Image (cartoon, rainbow, N blue to C red):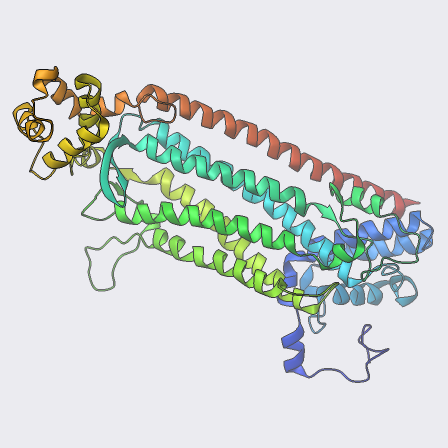
Length: 491
């Protein structure tokens, strides 16, 4: 048999259906570049530890760079995974006496775990970059709408007047936490399992710290059993993505609702809409609806990962092969969704008049009227709540006379007798003044909101600097790795 993996222990080859069933090649395209990097670092370390000769190291490195240039398409896809296919291609190029030495002291178990972590590390950096972009978009639109009145909702019922800036910065804060979770997750992803071999390390004199440094990992997954078998970093990443997609789906739901004729708060740019095949007047918010639906991909991937990893005994089990397609599926969907949401928010048309017109619909100023009664008339809030609740049964905003009539039934006296005036009532019923009075930290008053937006920008800048540092560390490690590779090839 020509299969370099099966030719020793196994006497027959699987048929086409079995090959397709057991192969991970379709998912392995994600880790092709990482596999080359891992091979380069491992080979350099083997040479430095005198496990392989310098001339063999040079030929292996040259072969790996050739494979890297050829691309994954040149590999034999009938192999069960990319690692054996790549090694087989290397042997084709440099011969087995040289290429067959590259795998010394290594297993596919630690190799694949390292490749997944390398690839996921780079993707998480891109996710963080996308999240910063989305948060900045939300902040930018919010800064232009500090005075844009709109109704705030609880239970999807009109609750109190607020502003669009207040609403959007709430989402910006949530996206900020998604960034923090992604960054925290990155710190546990960026750990090296390389050198753990199958699970019990190896008798070769390897230097795990050296390959860690060459590949730019922040640390080592120390226990060799844990190194090859743990996929908790995938579950954590999938959880971060699911949480992020849930936040995005909330935003998408609001864009769908706000696009309806009943709300007419916003109109999505034509790029994010479709029309009906039969009703020519329709402009459907399909992209937002799809984003809302795609949250199920991230949630489903998380559930799949949890189910796959549940109750697996130590150490490595082939079940784990099914874990990686789920994280790539979740990653691909999540990254695209973040960018799509940023585009929809940045380009949507805001109907400020419609928002302001509905800011008081449903007696949204009722809370401020009750608060005014408490402040002016020195009555308990629960009593004021009862009075205003009775008034809410009527139509329209109450007059001072109507307030006094209800108050007389509730407490036996009028509130005008306790100092409440018609002017105070009118101020309490004014949605603009309602908003301006909300000066507590995090409230929607223009001054408070400007400060909140300023704080959001400052945190975004801090996160950009943090991300820049993480990227610089990786770039520096990759530059150093290829510098060492060049040195090994020139000696």
